[in-house]
Length: 148
Image 1 (cartoon, rainbow, N blue to C red):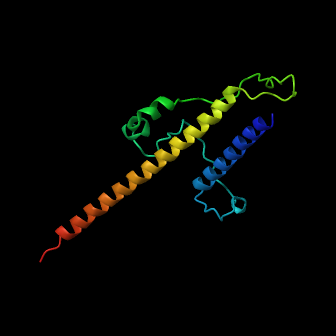
Image 2: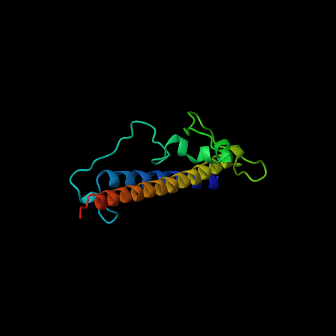
């Protein structure tokens, strides 16, 4: 029961931190700025499911690069069940048993987190390369337009 409580507490804390970061980003606040000192705040509303590719096209996604990642990455929608009862308790200890589904969901969460970090890293590298190429093009135009 304690493990389940920690799991849900961490999920709640991460969602609050994520929401606060979204609000700060929407209002162009720095981490040292306080949101409580502003007279008004823009609250972002997500109308559609966000893309996890962070600027990568579908062909550039890590699933297409690594076959084992594509087999392991399963899209899962997490929604709380309507009538959830407490997990069955063990007759000897009286503590609820942790089911394999809960362990699997933690594993899935960490796997998705790893994939998202990998995608973000690849997107950052790709954007850096594009910026470098754009800078190279600008330099070539600047030197070619110079006349003696």
